[in-house]
Amino acid sequence: MSTMRSLLKSCRTALCVAALSVPVAGALPASAETLRVVMQSGLRITDPIMTTAYLTRDHGYMIYDTLLGLDEDYNIKPQMADWTVSDDGLVYTFTLREGLLWHDGAPVTSADCIASIKRWAEVDGTGMPLMTMVEDMVAVDDSTFEIRLSQPTGLLLAGLSKLSSRAPFMMPERLASIPASEPIGEFVGSGPFRFVEAEFQPGLKVVYEKNQDYVPRDEPASWTAGGKVVNVDRVEWLTMPDQMTAVNALSNGEVDYIQQLPFDLMPILEGNPDVKVEVLDKLGNWTYFRMNHLYPPFDNKQIRQAAIAAVAQDDVLQALVGNPDYYATCAAVMGCGTPNGDEYGKEWVVDADMDMAKQLLEEGGYDGTPIVILQPTDLAIVAPQPIVIADALRKAGFNVDLKTMDWQSVIAQQGNQKPASEGGWDIFSTAASLATAGEPFGNTTLSTAGRASWAGWPDVPEIEALRLEYAAAPTQEAQAGIAKEIQKLAIDEGVVGPLGTFQVPAAFSSEWEGFLPAPVTLFWNAQKVGE
Image (cartoon, rainbow, N blue to C red; front, side, top):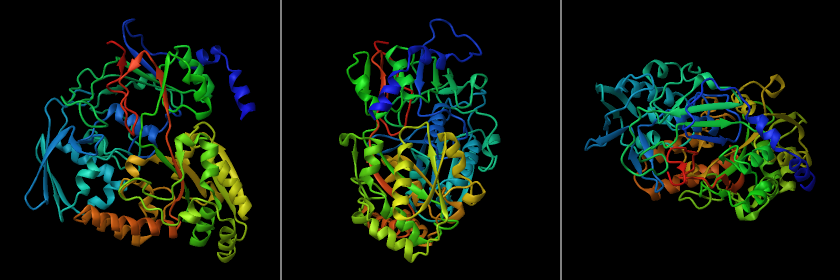
């Protein structure tokens, strides 16, 4: 680590300036307020329905809006629309609030929203099971529509207020009518910012301008609920793969905000009076690894279990975080401390059981097939895990091939359903918000419908049946019992390998305030101090 620090400290401000020297399509007035941020990596995938990547989700929140929001107390609130429910719980009537316009000036209509819900539900782990309970969606008029259910369920409002990947963003009907498997070509939303396509440099720079026509709600901002009040003229996302370059740029006033501050660089900024270091997502994240269930060797349950048993969470968390104040071991697929969290299998999920791993490999008939593990090189919160996993699997007896690439390439590769020998993969690791992991629909890893589910494509019909039971369960107590069964199956079937929980601090200039404490990165409400 000391050698790495020495190399990083050799970075000079000139590098920071060079990183920021990107062409600008048009000049703004000198008085224009610009917020310059360094996000976790460079944006390349811009369709927030096509991917579960958090960076693309954050891009979605900039330019799109959602029908409902979720506040910091997990209350579902109106955002674009309010709603009423029939006495039998089968008909939900949504009414759009006044003043909603697309960025091209057209009014938002019921037809737009129905098409957007359908596109989201084609691929989303909450949307797909929800649609099995939806009998019809009908536009009553341009600003009112109904969703008619075959059975009462809380899944409808939970889905439409979903915080994270994939959030049900509303789009114009012409875009929402494009199949979810195909990327949209226009980026027209109704949200608080407009996407400046002329200045978009994939992987390098994204520019957003204030949507002057946006009418925020009157309520205070809380997570994705309340008023989305924009206090700046322009937000620029700038890519700096070298984290020390970003830290120097923040110290020198060349950028205003770093989304994810690497833990080993925290001491550099913590004593700087011009910079604030703060954990904005108080709940934090869980990290895990996912195996490809479609092909050998991980089409074999015993070999999946062997991989989980081989990896010690503390080894991963030490490499990722280092400071135990910011991490904790946890075997619960739905998160420790959540109402549904259950640590079944803790004795071999948290602490490596190498003897168990070797025995399972032998019993499963592992034949030395190479294991391709994807390792991103430019995103600090997911770069260390694959290295630790690879080392542990080699010790257990796996033949491992560590394949390095940038994070956006990993995201693109995740959807490749070919065998590893034909350009696919066997293992990747990532992290997700605990705010959405605590129930079996917001938790993306628990969709187990084979090729229709998220990357890894586990096929466990028992979990799918239990998820539908959870959606129809009348009480939280009943849901908790079902959730416990789901987590047991998820571990026994090797659906996901939990690696523990952690928090990530952000860093920003003390000249700025109003960054919302939330599980998603949101830039409305932010403003210069005193303005």
